[in-house]
Length: 201
Image 1 (cartoon, rainbow, N blue to C red):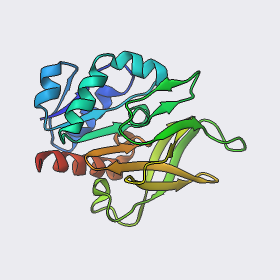
Image 2 (image 1 turned 135 degrees about the vertical axis):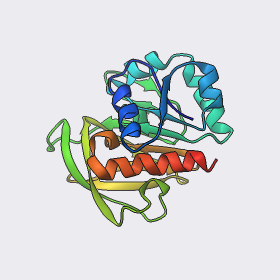
Image 3 (image 1 turned 180 degrees about the vertical axis):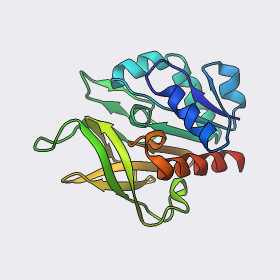
Image 4 (image 1 turned 135 degrees about the horizontal axis):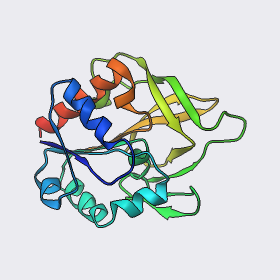
């Protein structure tokens, strides 16, 4: 069973609906027992970083524990940003610290927020992108981005006047700055791939 973490940050139900469209059942829950027994976890989010971390509350510690034991975790949008050490959005806030790096403002000179479809170069070794080929378009909506500083992380980039990290993989931790649930067939394939990762243990 894949569990989508329910912590009142916007798009959690749309992620569940996307799983249902591809024939998979995802449970929306913040029950610690569900988190413990899930085959994998999805942490979505449409909110400011600090608000999202506060809404996550005590679940933050549990997420770090189960991920350390090998449970797959997929962060989406703000949920992806929470995977990193800290963010400067409306102050300085600590993240989950699962991947080394910080979340910072998109540089001046670009349209902010970054909203719309962008082509992402897909490294062959990143498991989220199996069967998608070397590049595909995905839907973005964000004003901050991750500066990935973790030498163990694999990163997929999109061109936004600079190399903007669009997705990351470090062991059993996965994240997408884009919204797979809003990215049509390409995004649904990403969710299908993550479900497969969870089912394989």
